[in-house]
Each structure stands twice: as structure tokens, then as C-alpha cells.
Length: 280
Image: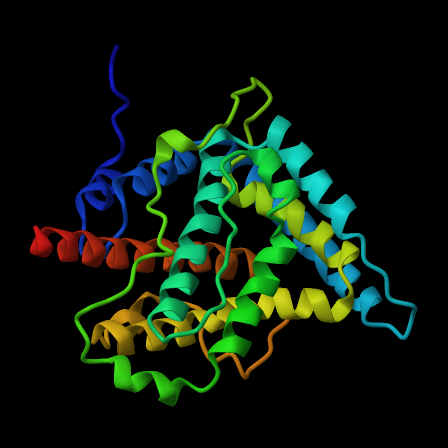
């Protein structure tokens, strides 16, 4: 059985470990990039759904009665993931819940806060419980509980970090049943989802959800205080949470949020493993 040969650039980024990211995530992303539908279908769908999204965004902001349908939204997403989203894209989605839950729990545990995030879906149907809406709400709840950043600077010089809530990502624990209809790459799938989110969430819920990405910079700053590393903000593409944005460039912002959590998770996982080896 021959191994598929990637282009020289893709081979280069496969071997570049300048930014921390686990090999499993890199392999999934390379397979996603190599999906032919990404290069043929995605540009057309992204253009169509970007226009549709802005129309829905405008309608939802008119002085009309607001409505939401969280359960229907998540059931539709899970059905679509089950039958149409590629296995590697599904695995990247499931990984994202775990990476962000771990980061928020590390942040809370090492600043002596009790709030914990328990969103660790292992299969698509788990997302009927661990929903994207819950994912957003847990992020905001974590920041509300954490309070002012200045209070955490006293933790900066400690080398004894707490990892009790940390759940290492083990790819064998994820279950995605492959189907011949699962052909859509990560970005194309998101283009299909974003209009549905805008329609089935209240206008403020959706506005908060798409601006939650901008907390990446704040997370990096706070974690940086704890582990004494002021370079973590370089991982954050989404910044300045006080500046609220609309749905423009949403696909790229969403994708870069995923990369941010993967990079920060890998950085913290290396730190955790290093601390374990030092104790042995």
C-alpha cells in the first residue's frame, strides 16, 4: 500500500514544529486540505452562504420578535455531521471541544476557581448533549467566574501547576463511523452551518458566539501569567474582545480559533508531561 505524497509545501508544514501542535491534529488537517471538495465546492458554497448569512443577519436585527431553536439546531448539525461531514473534519470538531475545555479548566484550576467545563464529546451524538451553544456559554461563564486578570499575576512564578481537571486527548477514544456520503471538508461544512446558527439563535446569542473568538487573546494572556510565558499571545489570531464584529470573514476567524486552541493545548500538554517526567 503506497502512502500519498503531499506537495513540498504540505511536507514542509508537516515537519515544522515551530508552533506546538499535536501530530494527530496535523494529520487530520492535512487530510482535510487534500479533500478535492475543498478546492472545488467550497469557494462556490462559501460565496453563496456568505451572502445568505449577511441577509439573515440583517433580518434578525430588525425590530421583530426574536426566536431560537437550540435543540433543533444541534440535532440538525449532528445529523449533517453523521452523513455528510468527512471523518477527519468530524474528529477535528470533537477535538476542539476537548482542547478548549482543558484550557479553561487549567485556567480556573490554577487561579483557585471552582468552575469547571465538562464538554468532552467522544462521538457525534454526544454533541446532542455537549452542544455548540453550551460550548459558547461555558466560555463566557468561565470568564465571568475568573474575574479581573490582575488577580492572577501572583500565580506567575509558581512552577507547581494543577492538572486534576486535565483530560489528555486520546484519538482512539473518538468514534466516527465512516460513510460513503461523508465527503465535505471542515471549511465547507462550516459555511453550511453558519447561516443555520444565525437563523436559529437569537440575535444577541449569535453576536456573542461569533465574538467569543476574540477572547483567545485574553485566554493567552491569562495562561501566560500562570506559566510565565508572554509569547502565547502569538497563537491568537482573534483579538481585542471589546471591539464587536459582525459575520464578515467568519470562516477564517472560526478556523483560526480552532488552531489557537490546538496550539495552546499542545503547549500545555508538553508542560504537563514535562512536569510528570521531572517528578519521576
